[in-house]
Length: 267
Image (cartoon, rainbow, N blue to C red; front, side):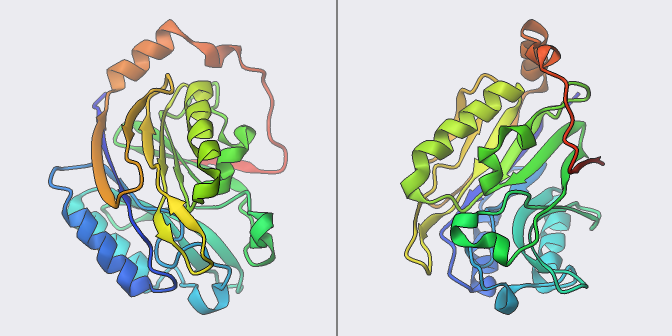
């Protein structure tokens, strides 16, 4: 199968200003000069990590979804990232959108809500994990705090995913955990792993150090960007992934178990 070219944007998010954030992210995306299959944006990329969902939420027919669809068509790539969504019943979700070049959309609602910030008091937790098939690769997108819970990230023994990705607003005060857990998730799941964070200071005076990264299935860094605003593109080699899994097939020795309170959706 073909290699996969992936891009991500690490940016400073303007607090509660969707239009400004879309414009700035579009500028960064425009600087990606080569063809890519996937462009990943941070968590809550239009607003920063906010509990003010009643004022900031959009619907699935709102301006940010339309913007992502336009970008996906223009770049012939999937655009992924999370925003605040209100559904038809009035519930709020920290929802990762997976927008394809044909305009179709899948989504994943963040499962592990950050109770320290009261996220569970505002948003509804997701119940389904998403594994997307895209250009011959199986990709599992998750959101921020999910990184701390290895069972939710666990790679299936049969039909494993190839790329695990996390979009985040992960504070600088916990950057050691971010970097350590990204490596752990890559190693234990024998998968390429991407973490996409933001930089700057948000409206709650929380600082973000970035540290967005792309790691291989050994937990070795392919990309590590520090705290600058940047867009990065790299190619993931299918042959390297398959060769490593053949030499070190640890997934086949994993303990079999199932999560009984959730479902996994593969598309």
